[in-house]
Image 1 (cartoon, rainbow, N blue to C red):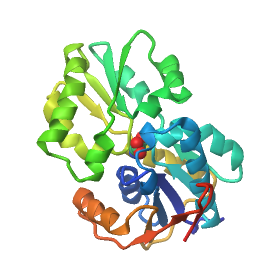
Image 2 (cartoon, rainbow, N blue to C red; image 1 turned 60 degrees about the vertical axis):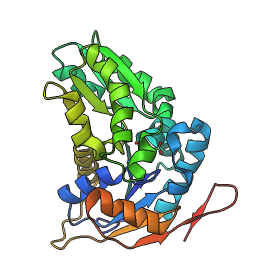
Image 3 (cartoon, protein in one colour; image 1 turned 120 degrees about the horizontal axis):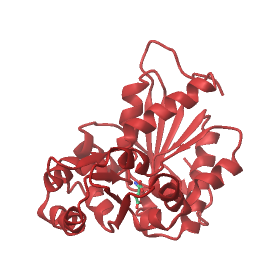
Image 4 (spheres, rainbow, N blue to C red; image 1 turned 135 degrees about the vertical axis):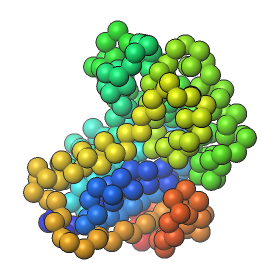
Length: 274
Ligand code: DGL
């Protein structure tokens, strides 16, 4: 492991690219490896135990690939497995997503903040502990959004169906006085324009991706592992799902064209290989 080693970034699908692009913007010299476990998507509707098994295997794969740090760019995998993988792999730093309840509570004027996430994220202990630590006397509304991840993976960012789903979830939160909305799923920043339109100008929508990129920078700096090279680092994408579909969605969501490499699971879902 050295400053030239890559950063590993992982999500159940394409959502983690919302974090990846912030890391690239902040740390352009870093080499990056992205793994989307698209064949198992959505994680948000699976058991915490199953998500933990996949997360452990992906982290193991990224360690074998020489990564100096792993960024779990998935709230669901962080909720299910962050403490588990930190214990299992103490040899390298692992950064994960925590719902941004703290800044929402600090900024709210109405005293009502909302969090949207997958079903599994709300089931993990991480969410309960964040609310307990930071909510104080602020009301935290939680709204699972089953099916939204699949809409985003299908590139349906502005369709009537996606808008209808979002209005159904958000209108009761708006009626309850919410003025801060936390995106606690890394897929959701891809529907930010639609979310902002539905919520209107009085609601602040919090995308945690920039904060996670800064945290990654801090952790690397503290470990003397920041890459100081002048040239840009390489970015390599892997998916366990269909590479053509991943490439197409990536292009729709970000405008990027990239070669996508396949990764394969063993038949017990415990190990990945190229
Ligand atoms: N992007 C993931 C997250 O941040 C969830 C996607 C899924 O349900 O697979 O929670």
